Image 1 (cartoon, one colour):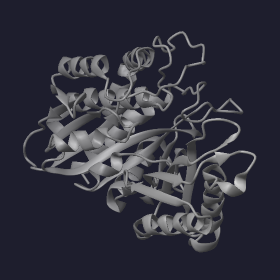
Image 2 (tube, rainbow, N blue to C red):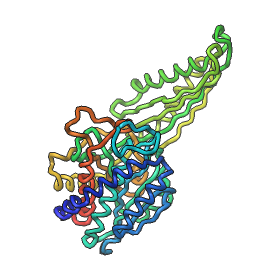
Image 3 (cartoon, helix red, strand yellow):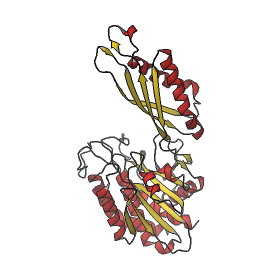
Image 4 (spheres, rainbow, N blue to C red):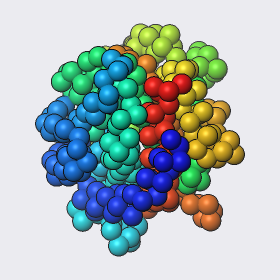
Length: 392
């Protein structure tokens, strides 16, 4: 079966590159993937897979029935949205939408999902159970998976597989990770409330900007002294708003940031820990504060057995020298984790780096590009893993 899957992928290669370039040229932001969804539904329908649009707002699902001998349903999830980034690659098929770019590889993910659907539709007689293809919107704003789940896409799902491009390893390589793959990502808002005054007489005021700087510094220092270094926490304040004039002491400053962690126990105690530190600093200088901590997506925790299945399928397909067990997780976030609250699953890394380049630009960079030969690697790996799911 592996030979047949590889042959089908080779035949589809020109079409898949064409699909990827079309999607890359026509990126759409989170929650606005109307043209992409229509395109995806059209491709699914063309290979005999029933497609339903408008799922999870702007998502698409397709279902391949299989032979019906097994009542399990395997889900394959890929995401479709782009980022608000101006593309600077100069590619012939570069984004035609000003200020919008597929800088995170979701064009490749969608293509891998479609290629897998095309191949599995050709061998449907060899699949005892159903395959449900999830083409998800709005991953970049960490909302799309929740939208899809709300529309019951995970109903009766037995297992789920996902893929994410990885420029740090060469095209044609596969990376698997047991356990934690990505971090939990939470949102933090802090309001420092001081008292306004003249810039020449700071002793008569309570300087919210200066206190805010103490809060930022103290939080960073406290991480290194009070958090377990073997259970990493990253706290980044990415936005500060405050002040009205150079010679007026600010009475209010708003801090906005993100908090990343890998371990559920660590994550659970972070809201109180942060609030205590902020309160302590503000109280020391006579200010008040308001702390809002909003939990976002949890950490992606790959299922051991499904990751083992992925690794086995990839090694059979490409040889063990092209398959890496990744030694470290990423502190980036992925809302694939939302699906894992409903069924076991595993996401693998698809190497898209150019072997001949010294520098492959990272995800979310305006010069980000991929080695398109990786598309076939991803499609074969996903399709063969799906086949092996029922033939272990």
